[in-house]
Every structure is written in structure tokens, then in C-alpha cells.
Length: 382
Image (cartoon, rainbow, N blue to C red):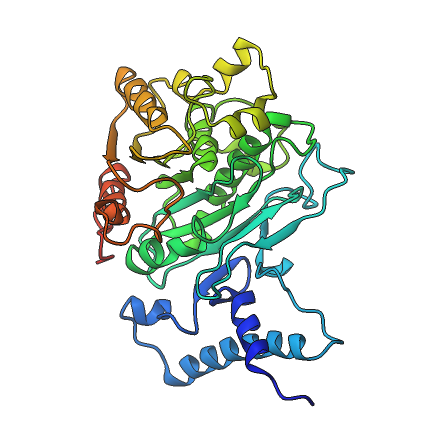
């Protein structure tokens, strides 16, 4: 057997994204990070702890072996295998997406193995990846990452959230790989919303399985994913797909929403041009512009909202958040907004070192404590 090279081990670590699967769509912190049990202060049987560590090591070694041996096929994109994904739709392929010439692909855009920055395209079988804390506090958070409705980023607005929200905050994250509106799906511009509605209903239907309160399920969206989240918060009553099972009898209304440097409006004066064109086309009718402008869809039952934006955002104008804030206030919906002079766009939880905006995860957790009515949530997870 050939010796496992350092390059192979590095590639294996990159493929796993610093995590290993724990079955049924649930991923836990592993290897270089604290385990959920240690992070939560739980005592564990030393034999079992050793078994878990051995399993983690075996997973990385298996991938390294696959890299070293040409005959092995490795999961090179870092995504969990099929058995560890929660597919949204019966039969996996979403309604109206069968037969499309789409190939799901994950690309790595970072040269630093310690800071992966993957993006996924070609989704026709949308699914959730779950990040579960050692001591769940009952809050579930559906995460819709951004990508300009051209791709979905997986790490800086997905896996990177685990430390602050899962390990420290005790929140269970459900990161969604949703369909994109320009890929030819029958539901067109409503494909992302259909996936978000279905995902929230599934989380609510299986809440007991993840030790969640079904009345404390929120959504957090970034950039174009913020438009998905805001659409869910304002259009949860719309029937954008036909019922497929009993889960669809449940409400798709999130109990709260966090909109992080979000795309909100399709008004050409402030809209993110790429997102607008991919969602609505080059010259949409005024009624379609209004329909897909989230600030124009706010009503009294829109869930409480947390808004975060940087004024120097050169990609998505902060006026998007300002208009959403004004619309929520006008409708009498509780809203908290944080507008920072510096931060740019797409910072997630990584690109904020030395800036006041770096505190946003703690602010978000404290806000959720109030919005979700759960006194167990704090910025430290205690």
C-alpha cells in the first residue's frame, strides 16, 4: 500500500471541511475544533469519546486513502454523502425539475485549505445539511446563503456559522441548498421560495427529532439568500407548490427572520442587478417587480426581523435594508436594525476582524432570545 502523502492528507482535510458526518443529515464539529460535548460541558464516557475520535480520524484517513489510490472514488466536493443529506422532496427531485439538463457541481474558490469557500450550482434535488449542538436550546434556524441567484455559497455563510451559532449559541442550523431561478425549473422565480417553504415545514414536522420547539423556528438569509428569507417571511401563505405529504399541512411562517446584507427590492434604483435579472429577466413588468420586492409584501403577520448591513456595501445597496426597516415599522412588525459604516459585502463571520460589525453574531443571538421567547439563549450559550 502506498504511503499517505502530506498532500493527500491536506486534500482530505479540505474535502471534509473540518467536519465529519454523524448520520441522517447531521454534522458535528470534529478534528481541529471542539466537539459539541466538550463545548457544552457535557461529561462523556471515555471509551465512547475515543470511539468518536477514532471514527472521525477514520473518515479523514479514508478520504486520504482515496486520494492516494487511483482506484478509489472520493467525495471531492466536501459535501456529505447522500445518507447524510435531508432531501426536501419525495423522490429527491423537486416538482417541476425532472428531466432538466442540470448537473450539481461544487466548486472551491479558496486557495487556503483552512478557509474553504465552496459554491454549489445545478441543484435540482434541494437538501438540508444540519449542524446540531451538544445541548440544543430548542431554537432551529433555516439558513439560506447568498450567491446572487447564480450559485449558493456553502462555507462563509454556511459551515462557518457553526462556531458562533451552534457551539456557542446552542442553535440548530439547517443550511439549505436551494434551486436557482434561472435553471429552467417549472416554478421559475418561485423555485427558491418553494424550497424554503418546504424546508421550514419539514423542520417543523421533525422538530421533536432534533429537540426543537416547533414554535421557535426562524430563518436567516444572506445577500440573495436574504431575498429568499425575506420572501419566506412575507409570502409564507402563498401556494407556490402542490402539497406532497402531511408536512405541507403545517405553516411555512418562520417565527422570526434575520436578514444579513440582504437583497430586498427589485426596484432598479437600488436592486442588485444580477439577482434581479436572474430572478425576473432583463425587462420585467412593473407588477412582477412589485411582486418580488419584499418590502412591498410586508404585512401585519410578517415575523419579527433583525436587519444587518454595512453602509460601504458596494454590491447590495444598504437602502435595501432601510426600505425593509421602514416597511416593517409601518406594518407594526417588531424590527431591530444594525447599520455599520464599514464591513463591505459578503463578510459573513470571517471578514470582520477589527471592525465593530464583528459583534453581529452575539447581537443576533441576544435578539433571538427576545424574538423567540427563549430565555435559555445567550451569546455564550449558557
